[in-house]
Length: 134
Image 1 (cartoon, rainbow, N blue to C red):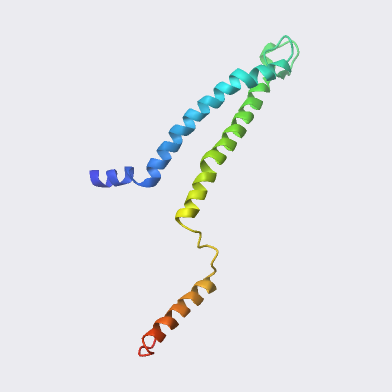
Image 2 (cartoon, rainbow, N blue to C red):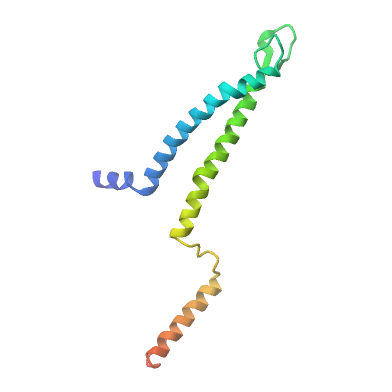
């Protein structure tokens, strides 16, 4: 039972996933700090003078009805920054490395593969002097 668990843990995908989650969590913390330190103050410039941040009130005399648009914009900016960085830092290099290690054979159609098999069989038959029939 422990041997199976050990194989599961050290399977490449599980270790890669664990590393990706840890890196992703650390990266989100960096982007959140950037947003709260830079983006939120910029968005607060566009907010009203009596309210904190960008937004609007549904009912003018009730402060509890203030709808904050700033955090939504900040979350969207966070998502875009994280997606762009992860794509160019992790996905593009990983795809490039995968193509170098294992070339993409999906460009071949079934007919192309069958033709290659036929040609290999014909070569094998010719090299054996035609003694065997396939």
